[in-house]
Amino acid sequence: MTDSRERSDSEALNTDLTLLLKRSGNGDQRARDQLWSQLHLQLKVMARRRLAMESRADCQPTELVNEAFLKLDALALEPNDRLHFMGLAARAMRQVLVDQARARLREKRGSGQRPMTLLTREVEGDSAVSLDVLDLESALLELETLDSRKARAIELSYFGGLTDPEVAEALSVSSATIKRDLRTARAWLATALDD
Image 1 (cartoon, one colour):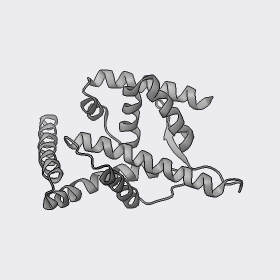
Image 2 (cartoon, helix red, strand yellow):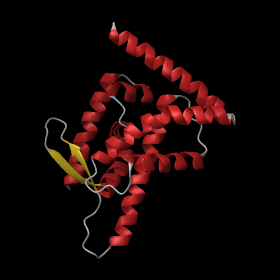
Image 3 (cartoon, one colour):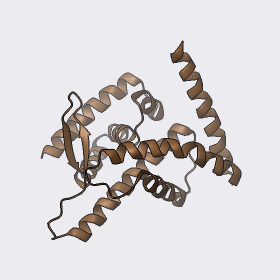
Image 4 (cartoon, helix red, strand yellow):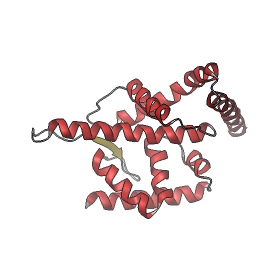
């Protein structure tokens, strides 16, 4: 019973946000303001999760969300629905974190400072693993050339904080396919990052 109610609430939220996205895309400033206030909290939760996994965070969640919104605004993208928007936001947050890591590397080159890293949990265990942001970005770019759907699934899951069913919906595949894709992609990334 609660599953169907949660699904119904989620569908209603998606419908409301989709309407706001369309109205905002047509230049309705009021819809844009409503959209920002509704999505801001969700994006802040995404950002907080991401930054909580950074061992050396350069910004606060609000700053990451604002930077991501600036990137999205500059691109003048028109998302179709909430999941599409969240996917675009995940990509923007990834870009912001990579840009910060590159800037830190430029500033600290030769000064003995450690690179910015992200902490992540093993898929099957509780031990934390430290990943260099630029190494992760390089590995994801390589994975994109081999299998763009798997790379996108990692981006939506890792940077966007979307659940497996949300990733499946965003990529228009089944949840079982996404589970396999994520398992394969994580294994591939682990190997690539070990090298």
